[in-house]
Image (tube, rainbow, N blue to C red; front, top):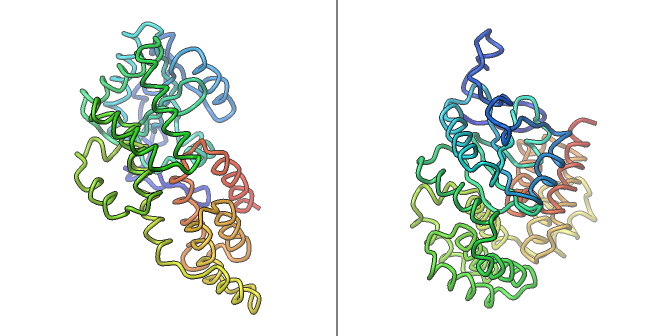
Length: 323
């Protein structure tokens, strides 16, 4: 089952059992324990971002019609209750909170994100093995208890190095982490992004192809995969000057503006790429089968749901969609 966001519409493989007169499965109810609660768009910052400053918070995006959610939800509740406050669970019904689902780039459910100290630290999408869910919660409990602070600091430093354009140094750090913990999700996704930044796209493709299905589903890996797809597309882009000349001759040459966006992306100018795509959507939202919006969604996934550019651009896109 898939939750697709576009123009405020949802596509699923069936009607909500609640809407059809069925009974609730108990998912999303606040009766799961004092460390479990339902939340919504308005309360997300308090229930998740602020609460995660104290203990890790798991966010479960679900819907009543989602079959896998009915299995995953109770397991998460059980593990969180057994943790006795070391980690908390917040449940978000995507049917009732579509704006938040858009901001968080939720395309399929179940989708699970973990937040700690106000930032996303882990996550996965889709049905996964019970053992992986248990390992996911155990890692969060360890992080909340302050275990292995050295590793957390090392990963943070690697992320900062990559953001500062020092991809070779970041790559070396991530390789060291994976040497000690081959299944460390953050290091795996970071290594993929380093390969992309270094232009080693074939190596990144090969690495993704070799991942087991469980790791390939991880939110961070999916984000890196989208970044790789965009990098491959941007590699084929032409000169920004060429596309600017075309736009000077015809400001409604949407293909030229689209190509210009990818040229900007290839040059590392993410903001300019977003601006160009938003301008296409503003001028003609349906152009080329909604190509501008679809490309923006890919950029948001590559940037990450909590990236400041993703958040600001999503708000602008939503304003244009409902104007």
